[in-house]
Length: 457
Image 1 (spheres, rainbow, N blue to C red):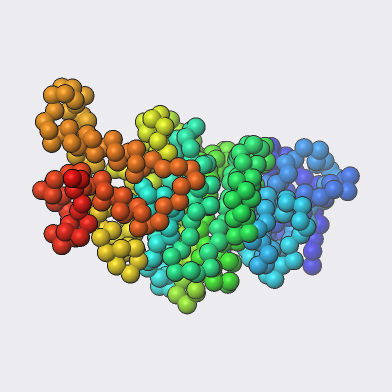
Image 2 (image 1 turned 180 degrees about the horizontal axis):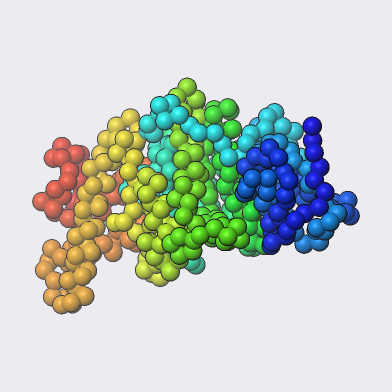
C-alpha cells in the first residue's frame, strides 16, 4: 500500500524533513508533488526513528510546507538500461538530453551497484592502448584497472581525456566502448566534449553523462554512480570492454562536502566528511573483471589537485584506493609540452602483469625500467647544473641533459591528434636510449641490447 504524506516539517536548503514516516529505507526514492501540479524527485539521505531527511534533486524553491505531498517509492534510485544507451547523452541523473527520445529499457539497475565478491574477481591482465607514449610505455593502462590522472587547475586534462576517448582501443579486437562522465563542468566545456567526440566520429561507442556546474549538487553525487551502472551493464551483460572516464572527481568530492555540511555532519580533514575514503572506494572499486563475464570495467578518474597539492585529501585518498596514478606537471605545461605527464611520480602498479611477450612486446618492461632510471639521472644532472652551470658539467652529465631534452620534446610531447602504436612508442624509446653509451644501460639484458640498441653513427 502506497502512503501519501501531506505537508513538510522543515525545509533547509535542498533538504526537507518529514516526520511520522514508517518503514522508510535509506536511499529510497520519493516523489514530491507540489500544489501547482508539478513533481520533483528526491531520495532519503538520513533516517532518525520516524523522521526522515529528503534531498530534493531539483531544489526546494517554491515548495509549500503545508500543501506538498510526499510519496515513497519503496525502491532506491534505478537507471533504465538497454543496448541503445551507446551513442546517447544523459544528464547527471541518467535522463536523455540529446533530443533523441527516451530509452526503452530492457532492465533497470540500482545506481549504487551491488558488491563484487572478491573471490570472483579476475586479476587484471592485457592492456588498453591509448596512443599516448608516456602512458603506454611508462604507466600502462591495464584492463580492469583503476588508474587516476592527477592534474591541476587550468592544465590540459580535458584535452587529454578527449584524446584518450578518441584513440583508446584494445589489441585483440574485443568489443570496446567508453562511458564518459563529466561533473560540475561549465556549459562551454560540456559542449567541447560533445563536439570533440562527434567530430572524431567516436560517438557511436560513447555513453556520455553531463552534470553542469549550475545543476544541483545532489545530481553531481549521483552522476558517477549512473555512469558506473551503465558501464557494468555494458561490460557484464553485453560483454564489452568498457573504459570509464570520470572528470572531475574534485567537483564530486566538493559536492559531497557541501552535502555533508548541509546535513550537519562533523567535518574531517579540510572540511570533507569523515567517510570520504569509503565513499570514493564505493566508486573506484566498481572497476574490475568478474569470473565468467566476457567484459571488463576499467576506470580513469581525473581530478584537479587544489593548489597542485598531491597531499590534499582527494588525491591522497584516491592514491590509497587506486592502482597507481598519472601525474601532470605544471612545469612541463609551461614549456608547451603536451601531454605534460610527469614521468617519475607516475606509475601503474598492475603494469608488470599486462605487458611483455604476448601483450605488448618482450622488451617493454626492460625499456620502461631503463627510461625511468635514465630520466632520474637527468634530474640529478639538472640539479647539479642549476648550481654550477651546464657548461661546467662533465661530458656524461651533458649527454644526460641532452637526453632529457630529447625525451621531453620527442617522447613525452606529442600532437593532440597523434596516435602512436605501441611499436612506434617502444622504438622511439630505444632511439632515445641509444644516445647513451651501452655501459649506462644497466637495466637491460645483453641480448635485448644487441637487438634494439642502435647508436648514431
